[in-house]
Image 1 (cartoon, helix red, strand yellow):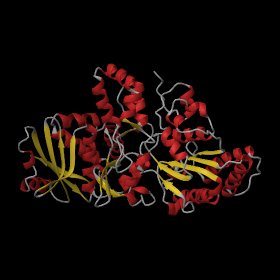
Image 2: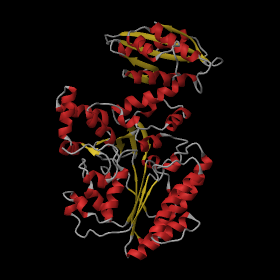
Image 3: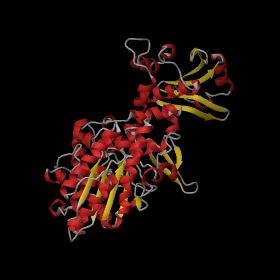
Length: 512
């Protein structure tokens, strides 16, 4: 059995050191043999760097590394080309000087290699390096750019610095058009896509393959690949957990599959999460815990979005393709970052339907957001563990007492639209518990603010602002919000809650 690769992004290391390599070289061959400037957007830790590393070795003529792979039957020449490989992934970009130093260091390496004197402008230096590489080798140049957007994403919220970096990058990437005749292929990867207007306006030959069906499986792992190359590891994991191999496959699918990057795309597994699970022989939130940016949660809070708003959300292809306007709509950013994925497409309306991809995200993301909505207390009246026990045991008095204590904290008051905010927090709490939760459930006579189900209890909530809790409870009864649950054998609680716009806290609550 070959070794499970965890965090290894170098193609040569995978091959030479006996790690599992899921063969994508037929797609590599197709891309490499079309003169084009490609762009590919995929979530972090999804295999973008490995894709570029594979391209690098291919264009470097490293035939021996590809023995036994699909490309061996396709390629006959194995020519060597000059490769310029820029990786923006590892550096910090907290100042324009740090960004400039990172780019300057890489350009200096290539200037030394081709015997050039450094010029002033980055774009001019880049152009001269391409010309020198082409002239000295007699071959067209290959340009690879990994995580191009890292300097911009690191500075979301810092508009001034982001604009300065964007200006530098726009001129830099414009060279790809200027030197088009000397470039055999360019390949740019990133998590997000800033529109051509803002960054790639000078690269009018850019081909975006992010939602192309032909390349939808270039990054990530398919069910077929797991069965063909990882089946023995699935068996080991099943044995470790005391389940059958078929049951293990079902759990892996539930936890790590569900990604789609085109209208018609086979199910794709998160490669990092899947490999970590097989390595540790345990199901956990590996990809999520490897680094989820807090700015995503801040954007959700800024837009007063409920978590339920991220279930079956609909957007056009144009809306999903770029994030320049994410200040008005965070959904494209969530999609490109891997927290939402395509679940369907309406050919008539030309709209995608998106939801969270799998159990890992469905459980971890609410938990992550919850950390930003519930204060950390040490021995105070609100405690997550006790809160969970109250809900699970049907202790509505304890449940509501803890909620009141949380919002009574002067350092943590309801902000924004009170009813919406509390509704969102309530929804998050029960998603964290793993129980069924719905916000704004539609009935024949209105919308229930929140419904929560545990194995033994059903909670129906109605929230009111500057009205009495009794009025909220009366609405539950008058509009027969509990009618859909009349045949359910679980005990049902009707809970009316009132908020005060003056104190920004829960004023009172009643239960029936």
